Image (cartoon, rainbow, N blue to C red; front, side):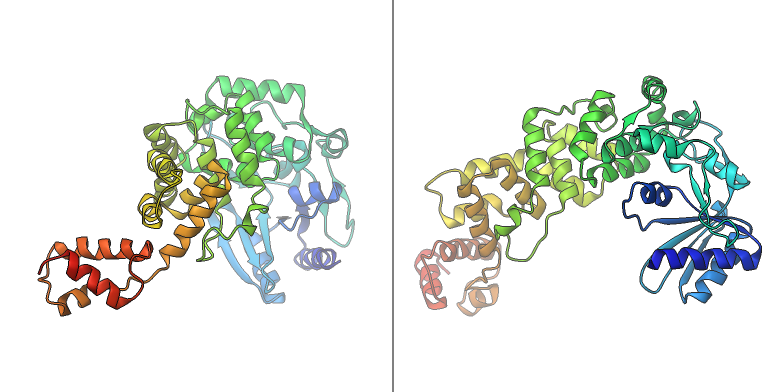
Length: 414
């Protein structure tokens, strides 16, 4: 009801400005599928900047203009974002390039879209409010459960549509139309995806990892030989699929108080670690570069290789001391530790990681200032003494500050 009233209001602004006004794309698609979608895209045949400013003022919202794309975003006080765009045509100079935009009609605007199911519009003007514009038979394809490109050069113009085709197919449990599948395979064969930037590739992969059916989508990527764009050595073994299933069901896992500082799971990073699990350190670094991942992500992924293997091996020793656990796990990024818990997936490992998380917050009984007061000369020995006494503290060989001082005095000469 709230959205209906908002769309009515947007149509009223269109009438006052004498602009044909439409809601388009994913909102229309999901409305027909009876799915919630608050991504509202408005297309007008008129001046989008003027329209956006009038709308924002009327609704006390904030407006951001993107002149080069003839678009504007209005953010309402409740946080809802409305995209407003001028009806436009697009031409692509070469595969993978960003399009050259020109003024057009609503029909032109719908023709430039990726798939027929996303190329429908609903009129918002009072006269004809609610009329569906569907010259490309998107409604029919929705009913049949088909993903169909609008023209034969679609994947060539924008190769990221390959990933989108897979996303929509698996999200809605649809199928690619035969001709679209053939065009997709040809686009992969012609290596059109090598024309897009690393950032655009990363964005598409992250969108897939964010989907509920991401495992099916990654499997589909494998079938179409798309994983090589992340790294040629990536293989989706049954072991990796099992890891991904564990990670995607981690709500069951959050009952385990793994870390006490409320560090939350970064599911995207954990999924990437699982997908990269069959790669060695060097290959994982290359894959991270291919996706232009952040330094933080790359470091956590690389740490999930040799460092994590060594740490898991060390803590699997039944006779390991608390300080041994601390030494083995200290320095590993939090998300790498989480990944280790999923990889091992046994109570003993998880318990030891929990013990480590408690030790991480342990305050040392002795500081450098204490050593100075005890008469120890400043120097490299400080680090050694402080580390040793801290490990003794973790192993409960010393329980109080006085015991720690006695431990140091017995062991270290001034």
